[in-house]
Length: 330
Image 1 (cartoon, rainbow, N blue to C red):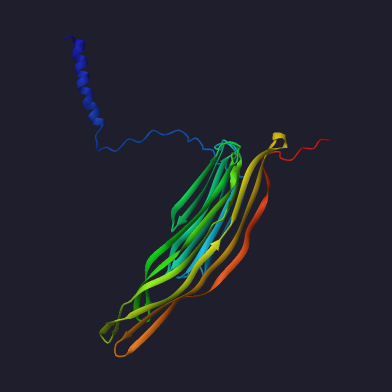
Image 2: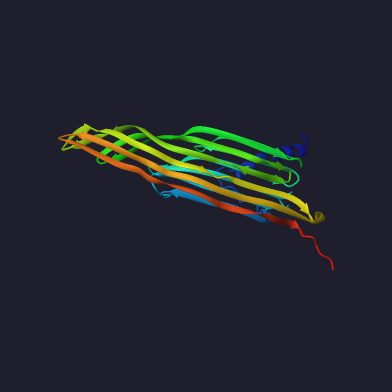
């Protein structure tokens, strides 16, 4: 073998040993190479036009163990084209949400939500979704990618049991368990139209829920170390909530002033018709041990609330981009 070949073989045999010496798994990882300066990210574009509605109420209060409540929300927003927003963007939504409080816990009853988003002169998406007890039971989407209007037409009615829960309360010295069940119906309608320049939508969400109770079972009554079973009963007739909240949410985009400006035409209105917390729920217990005793406890004793009101009413025009008013000349 030539001397050059012997030298090459010796080097190749030595190299793996050198590598293993520097790759000891017990040694800490080497410090990473210092990275270069981080490239700053452009800020997320923010809407320059915003109209919002937020309205909520609880009866008797939001911290009551027994009660009901609702919230109504709506929003219109527009963001001019720029970094991260290739087209003028229009957004809008509106919803009615109702809930109940039973023995200190909150339970969702029903909700209807309409939501739309549009890239001006490109595409508009709008949908209506109905929820029962927090789960979607219906959704209807609409899409337009042209200037031709697509009509909106939805009508739905869903009779449902919103919740069915076991409840335990104390009636005098007696623990009593019973079943509390809320039943009723949710309705929703949607009319209007969409095109690739925006949406004109009128939603009509409404719902009602009544409370029923049954299957009362009394626990033991004990006196001087002796115990007997107690009988129990209920008296109930409760309207938890009846609410309708028509919402109009219109937001359309148009070129004005011979193309020098992009103008928004908007309309956001909402009204409320409400009836809630009307009725009573009383629990009874009886036990006989060295004499008979009766106890009762009023969990609900409501005279009812009702309301009819306009919550929001805003309409007009807004210059999103450029010069929307004709420019005068000297």
